[in-house]
Structures are given as C-alpha cells and as structure tokens.
Image (cartoon, rainbow, N blue to C red; front, side):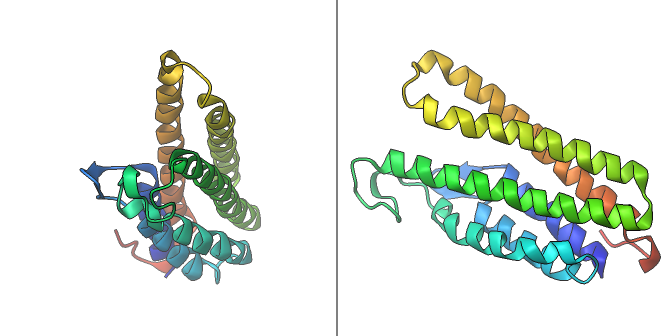
Length: 193
C-alpha cells in the first residue's frame, strides 16, 4: 500500500521537475504532478501523520499551476490581455516556488520522523542532506527572480545554471522517494514498480 504512495510522489516530482512543451501545449503539466503528490500523501498519511499536513499545499499548487497547461503569453488564462502579464506570472511563479518548498519540507519532515521511529540512521541523514540541498537551490532561485527584472540579458546564464541545479535537486528528491519506497516499505512484501 505505502509503496504506491512513494511511487506517486516519485512520478509527481517528474511532472514538477521537467517542463516539456510542444508549442503552446505542456506535455508534463505541473498540476498533474501535484495531483500525483496529493494522491501519494493521501495514501502515506496512514504511515506517518506528518504527510497529512502536505495535502493543503498540494491542493493549492494544483490550482495555481492549472495555468501551465497552455502557454500563450499574449492571452494568459489568469491575466488576460494585460500589459503586465509577465510581472503577474512572475509573482505567481514565486508563490508557487515558496509553497512547493514548504510541501517538499513537509514530505522530508515526514520521512525524517519515520526514519527516526524505525531507527534508519542512513536514510534519515540522506533525507536531511537532500532537503538542505533542495532548499538552498530553491532559495537561490527565489532570491534571483525579483532581481532578474532589472539585470541585463548577459546575466541570464546565471539563471540557466541555477535551473540546472534545480533539476539536479529535484532528481535527488526523486531518488529519495525511491529509497523510501524500498526502505520504509520492507514489511509489505513484493514492491511494485
């Protein structure tokens, strides 16, 4: 039962981490990733009560990222044909980033507490290190966003580097969920893929 919960968290992070578009259509929309994460947390709430706290941020993220399904800058669903739609999109993206950090914190906190109960020191240390890395990279991205408006285009390379590190941090979270699927669900019998 719990293996499917960690599996849903893993697949949810794939949708959240990778932004692939075919023209204006998003192939891996974030809101589907957050739906997977919500479903996984719903299952895992029986294993560790900390996971229950992540449901509300996941629902908020589902609603805030619905706009990502269709990318049309001239007529955004949320902003309409407003001149400052780039600024509004940037503000919404910042809010999504903050709530996403909080959601991942809750999940990592749940894993950490479960590892403490089960005396899994290695996984507990791995969870803490992975969270710190993810948080650090996320914080750098959040700090850079407001300053990027006034910076010359030459500094866009910095954001590309931060973006690559954010992908690496997301992959490390995905691998943490895979480890949890194996180590925190050993008593369930056969592990499904």
